[in-house]
Length: 313
Image 1 (tube, one colour):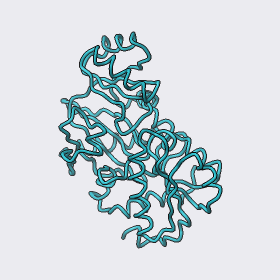
Image 2 (tube, rainbow, N blue to C red):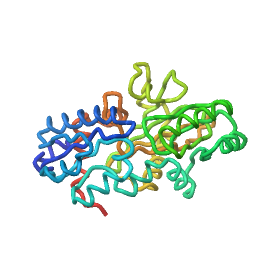
Image 3 (cartoon, helix red, strand yellow):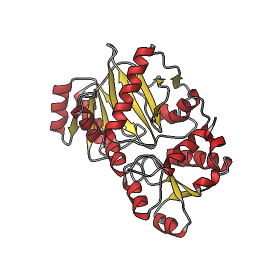
Image 4 (cartoon, rainbow, N blue to C red):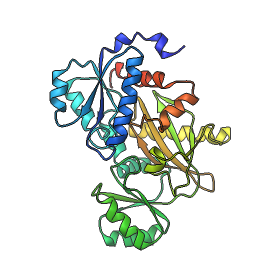
């Protein structure tokens, strides 16, 4: 039986959908927020939108808000700061709490937590100078992938195959984040795996003509391939789902999230990162995985919101 049939929409009270913000992912958040707001209103929930800007505190204080649905991607919304503000105001909200949100937004420290628990994640280095680039090239070899440590949606990322390219990619990534991460390149298929209220949804195998699943492939391209079922045999798919569950538990995720994982030529899985406020656009992956699990977009949104009814530990 669907969640819509089990819950009276009135139980949620007045719901503020928070979207927009100032991060590099603002445009994605605007699309996600409008989709979520329309789904909630279509389900009979008393929901309204707040485009997050400089007047946010006044808006939150001036409105009657029973709970918030956070659809802010990137810094300022997905990094624990919005979660902390809502905690201080006593407003229940969707998704992970302050600690898990901040940790998952920091790719470097997420990797360090996984490494401490023996979970597989690619070898990496932190770049703060040209000398760091030279050392990383010598220790890790090529190809490599360069990432701003606190951005999402593949913003500022680049695949490099030489020291010259590495230096240029480091300089470009610094425009988004003073802390830049470089990782060993894993050659093989990429999977994305969504979590919804403790359930691991069907994994999706990603295919793109780009060198990796970048911003354009995620949100703009029409030739990106999404394979569900993902093509793994039952044992390997079970291994991937179990690894994702452990990775999310290590970070402290709750409500919903999406993990990105690579598989190398030997079949080994490698954890890349976790998104605690995944995209909800027409190109987004969590709605796709939810459909494969028998949930339409409206039911997915209601399940994410329903988690905010439960007290935080």
